[in-house]
Image 1: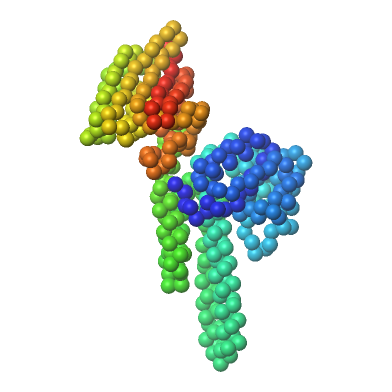
Image 2: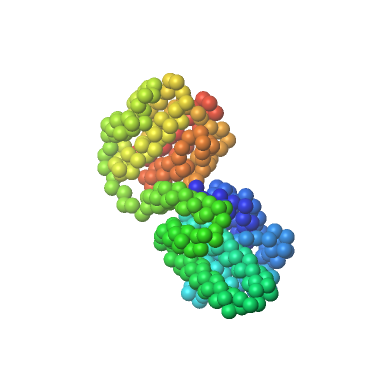
Length: 398
């Protein structure tokens, strides 16, 4: 889960493709951001800047009417030299010249299309964090300058001591700005381990001017560390998900009944002290990658176990039906179920149909199922009814 410090940030998406806007807006909404506006017309950016006051802009480069470079030129005229407005450029043009031109024009980061949602989400949070640090330093600088002015007037006799204090504090501010620049560079150029960078810079900030920090500031830093740890879990799962499509399929003949019994045995720790009945019907053998299809059964059966957790008597049915073209495998339970109008979103990454407090999970298990089955040339489906249970199916070609 992302750090909630930034969920109220104003984020503006500028892209002439509605599909790109929908994907980005969906990602942002999933991560908890509340204030999102978008436009397919770059000519409206100036008006939106003045009315919406964005904290971050996601900007396409190649658009009708105005290019992203022209939009950046317009923004230069509007943004105060003391302000820090991060612009993340998203474009299909990955040439070095375009990248350098975008960064020189004022963009703070650059991503090539088609972009990776994980990386987009991380870069957005890192840029907002960089903006937060910058604003904090700006506020501290203003407070510092005011104190210097007041003390200069009231303590003329201690001018030498005051000048020494100014020198010391200016040095501290320069060091803090250098750290901010280094952090911004890492955000823009070294995202192989973004969470490691976040944690590293938080440690530095925790050690810097500790006695001058308010309880709120210390709390915010601790929240960021906690949020980064939570995101590590999500990233690990998503990295595994992203590797599915690159892993080589090793197809063999699979005894499906034996595999399902192995999975049920494997999941026994989750069924202890539970009244669960498994009904295993006819289950056809199939051809496929043994490890990947085992993961499909693990995800589907563990989901059935999880979502029947509030049932006194849980019933899980597993079976298959075969015709000349495909095998229809299914896992049916009498658990929490779901509103069937959302069935089309079941196998989407990040999509959960229940509140996080009701059932644990990160909303990627069914997406992994769908990815594996699709690689085998199959398809997935699901249907359910709230409070009455759900049935998940995957179809493999014979």
